[in-house]
Length: 441
Image (cartoon, rainbow, N blue to C red; front, side, top):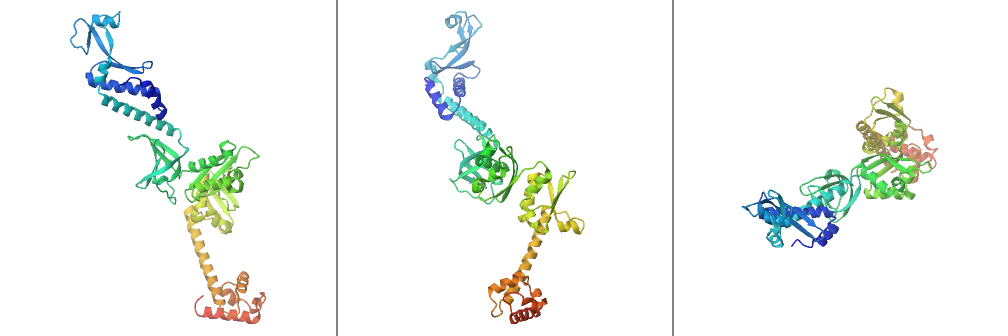
């Protein structure tokens, strides 16, 4: 039943991608195990694949003796000379099992061993294949979810997209295509475990390599990347060709290249900046789009003091401190941000990203309160007859958008505003005083 194996081996090699030598070894091992079961332990048995015959041949080694006590272990000198004319007493000769004895071998045992060997070979192939793809992007189909982890079908094996490597704001359904970067390949009892990630900065870098030919060709280099997955990212790029603008190459015509990456990342915002070997310049670029006045570098503490105009503080810090955090990750430096006013008025207060965030929230709250007062004022004076919306806008633009500013100004100043006569100006101030007198300011 093991004859004519040439075609079978070739077919399995083609379908499974398993090397022929591995298959032959599996077959030989299977027959040896089955033969040991048939003849019992302690027998010296060898298996050899004869490619010309397309058969696995089994040989039982027997000692040449004068008197045979165990036919499975001994052979007479007379019979031995037929196998080897130079045989002598005490020699060990390989006796080929005939076809009938093949039939007595436990075929089920051999089959199970062959299947096991083929599976082991397949696992080795998969492990090697995906180990070589570490850091590369692969695509699969969402198969199922296990305690928040996503199991992805890759065809020959499965990949795991752990919850920690998923972007929080992204969601996938069973059967949907998903891409990820191969993070690691683990040995597992069930087979190789391929772990992929969508949050790793390397995933962002590989996406740009796929979209930007200049990066793939080495003309443009991505020198660093930092991400807050699903929210915002920054990459620093450098051109090895003076005629190629690295930022422009990554952005593409009408933003086509960067938008392709943004689309894959489900809307994650991406800042592309110029790389600089000088740390201070790199930090200045990394804090873009904020305008930077000065950068003071402390090499010993590996930190930077960044001075920005007062009106650039919120922009430099970013939403929830995001801009400065990403800049710190990208540069590898601790970054403290101060305003020009803080620097002039006294000892400069150091703002960590968290402290800067508190300052930003406080500033935003103050602005909301100020805007609320202005809206309150405008709602009061809007009740005055014959005061249209256009005149209200003109009044606010002139700086008279709080109760106090209207009460304190002289009527003659108000009348200088186009569209406001003496009667209207007096009516506006009366309304403002009445409102303030009611304790509503």
